Amino acid sequence: MNMKTSLIFAAVVSSISSIAMADDTSRIADLEKRLQDLDQKYRILERRVELDQENAVEKSKSAPVVSIGANGVNFRSADTNFFLKVKGLLQFDSHTYIGDNGIKNNDSFLLRRVRPIILEGTIFRDFDFGFVPEFGGSGTAITPTILDAYLNYRYSPELQLQVGKFKNPISLEQLQSDSAAFWIERSLPAYLAPNRDLGVELHGDIFDSLLSYQLGIFNGSVDNGGSTSNKDFDDEKEFNGRVFVHPFVKTSIEPLQGLGLGVGSSYGRESGTGSVASGYTTEAGQTFFSYNPKAIAGTTPVVAADGLHWRLAPQGYYYWGPFGLLGEYVISSQHLSLAGPTAATSGSRAFKNKAWQVSGSYVLTGENAGFKGVTPKNRFSLSDHHWGAFEAVGRYSSFDVDDNVFNPTLPFANAASSATGARAWTLGLNWYLNQNVRASVDFTHTDFKGGTSQLLQKNENAVLTRVQLSY
Image (cartoon, rainbow, N blue to C red):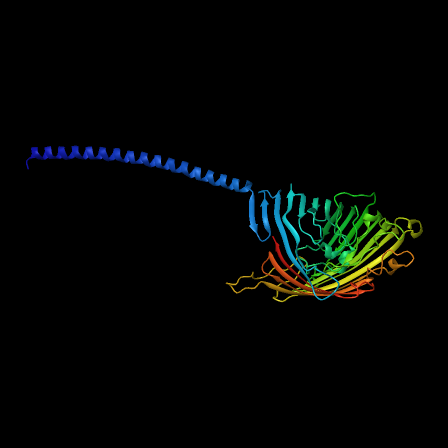
């Protein structure tokens, strides 16, 4: 290759290289621009993701929480200031009387308690409320009613104020939840205490429930587990109170931590026939005592409240592992008079009725017993070969009517139709299929003291059964 050709070739190569380099520079610049654009888009997307996550967190903080489980349906606001729990209770029972004990054609099925919607909740953190309607019952005429309707201001666990209609702070057995009780029906002393009433109550738990107290003013309810109506029909009021202590709950003595002791009481003045219990019944529902329905020489209702009425109820329970024990003694002293033609001669007289009971339970499957019931370790499931929890129960109770009500000169009650007392023992078995479903069977035997009627000359034997749904 001559010099001229070489120079031409070199020029061509140089030109091509310059063109290539220029082209590469352009491409690199274009790529860099594209990378910058992609980086900018990535940063924008990344920020959007961060904002979305922040918004999601903020929404979760403000979104209400809904849960459904064994404890019912629960609604809770994100700030926990508002809470609503929806619960329910169904008890389908049967009563079967054994032998010729004077009861005829009373074997029956009954919807003992039907409470499809029980509402409990909190408003603005410090105000609790409750509404409990009842569509069941054990009487011949069952009318839907409102059992509980209350508002509670909770300044602190130690200091709370409750108003409305709720359970009286007297009887330990009456205060136990209807769904958690050992028994299908409550014992004889429970019929000397009222159930629910309208009033105002100051209450609280001190030192983490080491001590609880209740002190209130109420309209006043009759004995026999009665509940007041939604209106008071006299001017008199009743003062009720209760103190309950768990002396060893804060100690390291484990066998005694489940011991609770207390006393409930009421004091008030009552007047009128509507303030007297219509009668007292056995655990199976048979009336064994009632006041005279007519005056000695007239046709007006005989017995009227006429003065002081007070009650005293020492009480206690003990739970340790699967073992449970509950006992209570109730005294009810009430001034009564005979209304009608004999009222001038009868005057006001105090009559004192007394009753007591001791109940024991043992969870055969090993779960812990407790005042709030038993929770099975394994729910009933045939496929998993689990049977839930079983609890054996036993109880003895006694009821004594003041003998002076049978005074032949001024009889407030008739010995021909009423007994002076009753003694009952009951055995039972509770089957907890799961936390919400329970089946129970009780056998109860009652002997009567005094009374000359055919009914009271014989004892009472009855089998009570129940299938319960609570949620």
